[in-house]
Length: 447
Image 1: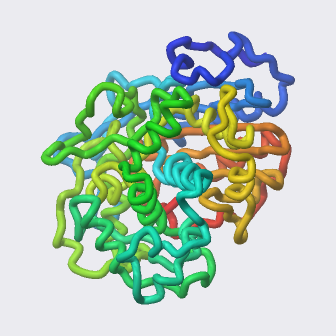
Image 2: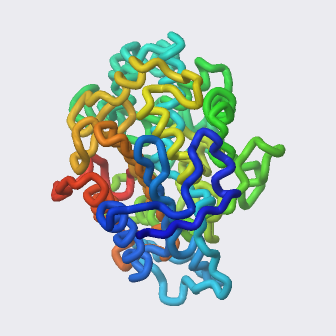
């Protein structure tokens, strides 16, 4: 029997969810195996902490927090990574008062933003007839033209087949959203349009811009007004960077989620290496020393992604969303319930089906099609260690959030790889063999 303690305050933000029983009955099988696997990763020190939430038929059957939300911090005066991205001895110290993880802890979702924010926003506008995924992006962004870009449709952007470059440091060239968009708009393509799937943050930066142009609202405001607030989600939203601030400054009450937050990285040592180390797999044009506004502190409640923070001011189509496991399960369940929640229809069933149907190998519209889950499943990962999975055939919703970045990068400049943990949880809960070559992603770290 698996005992799960429920904190009423942690559940009050999602009224559309049924309350979790004080004791969740298990058969000693799938739930126990998933729980034990996550616990083992935390107890062994492979990750500092995690939150796991599982729903069956819309009912929570497992909700548990593990370890710490904030375990390690910078030692004063240390950047935490050399030019090659290696952790320096003594750069990190364990907090004397490490912050425990709770089920109400908010996480920087990284690329899970692509589906839980931007893709949902596109779905809403498509559902209303305001967007056509088959239309060229230039219909909505009239200045996005030339060099093959006239052939790029929203479908190409949603499926990472637009031929866009996969990653560039926009912050070397832009300090606000307009300048960041202009820089991305003018970049040459990396591949011919439709020439394979090349996972790209840039495509979702452009999709976020499309949403704002069509909705005539900022991406965060549109989602708050049209989806998050109506669903009763009180802990989901973007956190904006304000000019001159070293960290996000709270907006008016209710406009931005306020924590508590899981700590992520200590600055951006991974991106620092992407820019400075030409052997790391990225070709960055220009002088890497021409910009030096790297954050030199531990990030808590501030988006980890450098482009989202420095270039887009905290609100971007590819990254920047914060949320809790509970809120994310509500959004996943909305899709499993074909666009309806709490007696209200948010999306037509046909729209949901169209966006979850595979388009190219491993990819639906926005959503990844995981090879490690039953047919019809949809998922997405985030660089900070976040992961969501929906399995319609089993009426299964899974949210696993980790703070894998808090221990820093290793001698290779890499963070702990939680892919095996995610696949293991999927295998435990679905009974499916997860021996597979890997997700259809881009370069290491861009997920």
